[in-house]
Amino acid sequence: KQEVTQIPAALSVPEGENLVLNCSFTDSAIYNLQWFRQDPGKGLTSLLLIQSSQREQTSGRLNASLDKSSGRSTLYIAASQPGDSATYLCAVFNFGNEKLTFGTGTRLTIIP
Amino acid sequence: DGGITQSPKYLFRKEGQNVTLSCEQNLNHDAMYWYRQDPGQGLRLIYYSQIVNDFQKGDIAEGYSVSREKKESFPLTVTSAQKNPTAFYLCASSVTKGQGGTGELFFGEGSRLTVL
View (cartoon, each protein chain N blue to C red):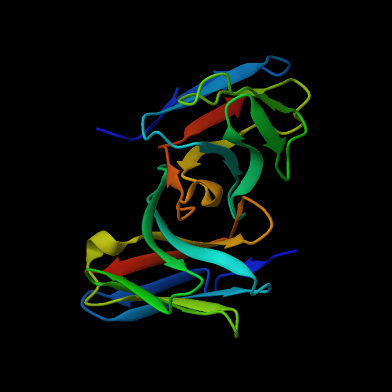
């Protein structure tokens, strides 16, 4: 059974710093990995999707990497801003089924 | 604008009542999903559907029911058999891998159900 872990559960950094969020998974037979952002009381917004054949994806100040062999993904946020404050979740899509397995998220606070 | 619409955003019900949450999408996606989110826990899959008139149980289907009569719509009924129904419910859709999609999920804004 796939298990997805995100550590730390919460992170606070000063504005302007670069930061990395971590995601690990136990079963490397994945089809893709997706990073989401969730603001309080809202739905999830898709940030980046990495296919299993890819190593990384970039969108603006965000860069996500994938290392299937070690079961890890990182989300790099450059030049953080207060508007980046949110909970970030990763989720993996395994071969053989049609559903995502989610981590419990990292709650990020950017301090002005 | 294309997207996923969930309604109502907030819902209060008494114990023992069935409630139905609406989910409509105009993205022309074949697959639709219902997730439940509780504080401190990851999202858990309730039901999913990859095609009209077909759906499968997820990890926590007990006490819930769904229908998929139209491609655009995937309503979720929370029945009185659900022991702890108070939660945040999220609907999502995607183009499936089988249909040549990436499997990327797009979510609605959620419905918060409180059972009094």
